[in-house]
Length: 244
Image (cartoon, rainbow, N blue to C red; front, side, top):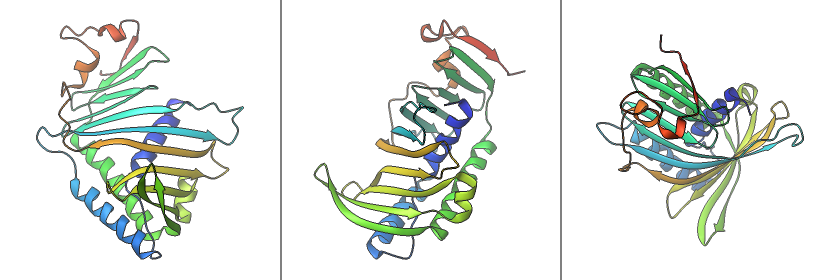
């Protein structure tokens, strides 16, 4: 999978952290409405608070012979002025001063100027707009209770609006909502034949809105030491410096 495709799928994974609903199925609608309200009310972290999300993504291509897609084990750390995304394929470390991408497969580090708060707000607005479109226009296909690992889940499938299907090549999404944890635990996104991917499964392993184990709040401290030299993990990486 190329870098642009991976970034696009990361965006889609975020987009489906908040599911949609239709007027059918009162219980499902109530569960999803409550979840949307709680997630929307959290907002971006303030002061020194850190949000943490650990999730797995598995891709199933339409043609497995042409498209070999690796599974992704990813962790996201989000604070007021930083965004860290770490995975087995690439990692992103961003704050107002620096935007650093590391690619283990290529042994490369891309270093650019940091993202401003306006960029973060812009992305938040884009995600909110997409979520509202799905919520207002998506159609609930079915919903049922299912016991998974001795826990009760509401499992539901939603057909996305036609305009959304055209723009993102997505046809429907199936959600696994844990009733006991009151959290979305898994999403399966189904794509049309116009997309290389047949389905994308996102399993949410852990969500913590009061994470306390982040060692630094500076992007460059992850990759570089106090002298500006790559840490031992990145000693063999080449650096592409785009800060000028």
